Image (cartoon, rainbow over all chains, first blue to last red; front, top):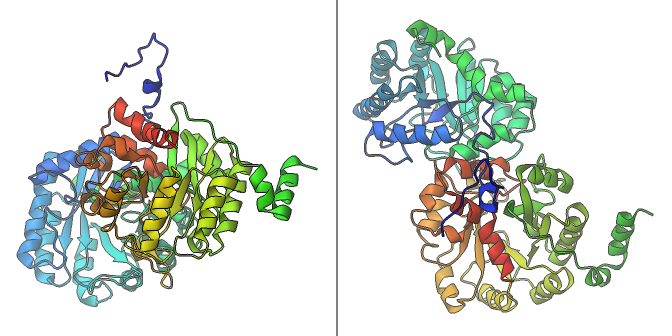
Length: 288
Length: 285
């Protein structure tokens, strides 16, 4: 059946009235801390990032931070680390004005990770570091990576979960993360996923003033952002999605739907991350 | 005496006898607004939620453009006296949004006397929709009790909502870990009851691609994840079998709303997703 659209001079019909306002949440400037090239269609890194940006445009996200490649590896060998980072370098080269790259490192392969840091951040376009689940970050073996990343002023992101049904062997908890953060009290770092079980994750990092939390990658359970603002203050909270595996919508709702002020929402959506990135952006001559 | 307080008193004092004489009015059919098929009233057992008071939830839903919300009861997840839970739900809907909340009762077909619960839902509370929690109520869809319930409820022309899951297994309370429902037995059962009206709430993409594939059930979008999730779902799931469900107040309601925006949906698809499919379904009852 053909659908008749309302015109400026016509009385709106029932069908036209059902379209949601495209700009219902358009007043916020949004940067997404946490995106991947997985979970989204495309045969190449460029295609996948192009699709991610197309969907991001629909929901008002201006910039995406991208880490890890086309095919994930939880415990990558050194050559695999390089391949993953190559995918990201290819993708962000096509959209330098919309994206930031984070280099994927592993504390199991310190020497190769340090060389990837030099290649991708010191001598390349990337501005952050992603640490995942190969080795728990309470082990000081990770420290050379943190030290060099801090020298480069790179944004440091460590995945964490407190899984009720058990973490992977090398998967850090927020408690592990807190141990690492205490070893580097002057280095800003991000507690990925807020530990998933956010009521516990928020408590684990609360005393650590060098720690920010990432809202990404868990179900949009109501109350998460309100508790984080209450316990940590809005200045230490960052919006991220974990797309393409996660919906942008479900993760944006954690901020759009939270019962907090618009000023705090803007901090969480962009201003806090932008502030964290400013030193390295400035050093690289990137205006954003 | 305030009339609402008087009604509350009468319900408390005389229970089902009064309820039988005062079945809640049917909410008006939405004309263009959203029908949210997946909300709960009451309190989530493991934390307070920002909108877990009916008035607050009603305000949030109305602000988002919801004109009808199919409301189940959080009490029904773990309470064993489901008759009381259903009665409280019916009363709460009547008190806090008779034009908004459509009460959705719960039956546990493994409990003694479940037929009585079913009858009270339909005859006393005027319910047209029932919600099942097989995983929280410790039965599977392969159990004979479920098949018997499905036959009885379908014979009464009811819409049956089966809740696939309520919470990510990774974030559940360590002493109350409940896995998702296994839908593998469902297709064969539904073939035997072709006139069924079964809706799955909180299904994920893995379920629609495997055990639910090919079944003529409705699914909501509350736990549909992945970028452009609805667009992707539509590649192998018919548009006339998808409904708007938010899982509020457990989830931020805006999640479901924004999913409509994240996918590229034409006017016809938006119309059926937002209210058309749900209203057609309830209209058949």
